[in-house]
Amino acid sequence: MDQFNPQWKRLSRPITEPSDIRSIFREFIQAYTRPVSLQQPGSKPPSAMSSLLQFTGGGGGGGSGGGEPTSGHADASPELGAETVEGSVAKVSLKRTTGWLSLLLEALTAAVAAAAALDGQDAAAQQQLQQEKLLCQTAEAATGTAGNGNAELQERLAGMQTQGACVLVLGQQGRDRTLLVSSLVQIILAPGVRTIRGFEALIYRDWLLAGHAFGETCRHSAFSMSLSQRDSPIFLLFLDCVWQIWCQYPSCFEFNEDFLIFLAKHAYVSEFGTFLGNSEQDRENLELASKTISLWSYVNRPEVLANFLNPLYSAPSAGTDGSSASTACWPCLAPQALTVWAEVYQKQLLGTSQNSLAAHRQLLSHLHRDFTDTKLTVRLLRQLVSNLQEEAVSAGLTMARTGA
Image 1 (cartoon, rainbow, N blue to C red):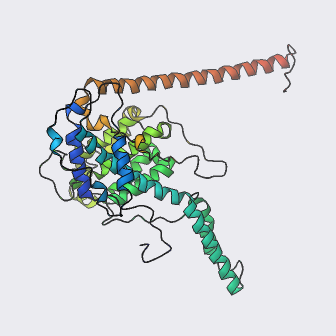
Image 2 (spheres, helix red, strand yellow; image 1 turned 30 degrees about the vertical axis):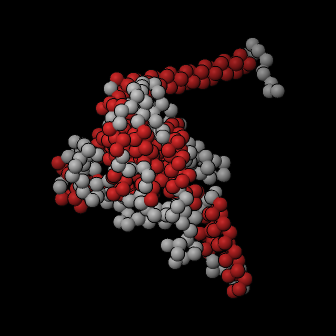
Image 3 (spheres, rainbow, N blue to C red; image 1 turned 90 degrees about the vertical axis):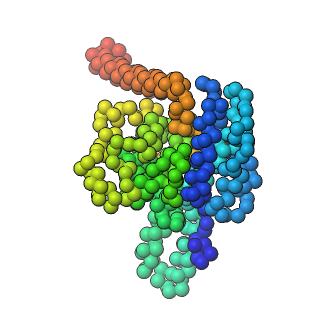
């Protein structure tokens, strides 16, 4: 696009092809689900920081080909059967773990670039705004009609003050990587999407209605020997990216980690009909509305919804100037900020450790609930003291307190 129209500027290099994403994911799962790569309870999951630094430093400078990021990270290695020391991670595990983390970095980088342009505070967006203003002033000076006939342009310029530049996300079919980037942009900028209902609406609108082929991309597991051309964990990559942002901004999401794990599970194996079929036409032909129950209907039940609420969530407040600076969640793209989602990829190997993590979240929920109740009690006691002081002053029992 930027080759044919100089007003368009490329913000990010292409994301890895779906077929390469599938290969990287298969090798990542095969390496990371080996019992030898499982960390001891209480230890930090491997982030593969050193290898990822090599990826961002050595591999990021060359070209913009969509398949480049896969080189050097998903290679079949004869070290797969190498013995390792108990409690340490094999080199091949570190290498293949880095391949998946590099995909997360790619997707988040593209989303941050697009969100920064849309935010209006981005330098490129401000430069485009100044150019548009200059063109408008030049046109007015040439025609001698200052303030006339340019209402539409002025309205667009006013919108750019807060909305930023226009961003175009391109893809081959617009049903996989395009949805990945556009959805992450909304997660970063829109606080309403980070609520449970907003996130449900995002998946329904930008994934189900947009025609993401769940029936093909999520048909087989990573260990299946028969894979189709469309089989690729794009939606799981999206949920993993959301989880990375959730870990960095835990108080900005109304839902907890269990909600994301729940969606990751039911995208592949589910008794609900929400993720069946490749399009709305397929779901209508299969009559899923009458034969199955909607996943959202189940999630929105009060007794079920309570299990997915984040006790640390605090609703955002807009900035004093109405900007989105106070509500946007800009993810850190440093390699050490990314980690492996162990509760999804090592669920079968965690065993009692997974139960301890769930107990930890439950304890955190109870502590936050007690803290909230205590704050409410303190507020009520302060109000009671204030009322008693006013009654004492009106009865002449004490002097009115003057402010300093």
